[in-house]
Image (tube, rainbow, N blue to C red; front, top):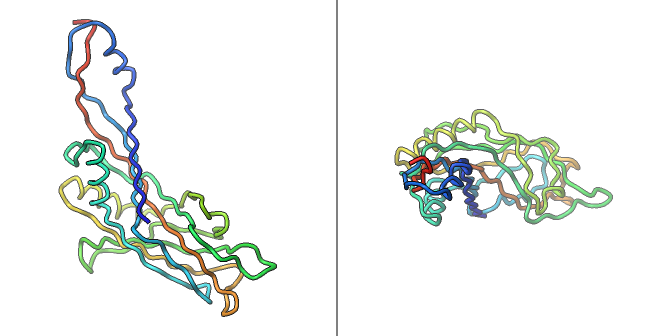
Length: 213
């Protein structure tokens, strides 16, 4: 379930409006803040008779960011800084529990590990969710609660990306609790995905008119 968004915002708008005034042309450097959602190619597929379940997906983060930059006329050499700004999850399909229950409430974590660094790369918690509604996340993007260890892994990967690396991640769901409790006759079945929200600062030079010259 890959979903990349790439929306630029010029944070020096007043200075750009100054270019409309008469004067001499001059090169100005601006910081452009861009948001990019980095998502896996596939969903977590849950089908369990137990409250304890797991699944794994992979994210080619470096390639995804490169592709998004290229589509908008930029390259990684244009990037001044990049940082993890948030994460969200969404349910794409689900099977309701046996009546009279109307929803699944799940609790657990999503772990993250870099796969581009080999098997000895550290793994840590990226997202923690508690009594999260499966029904409530159907078709909706739910803001995720981030854990410091996983955030550090992503931010280090972004720093390495600026230095020329192509970071990639493994995301693993570790669910530990569910209400109602699943069983062989009442399995919890749903598909969902989690995305990283990355903030990128790009330095761009623009020719403007200086009215004082």
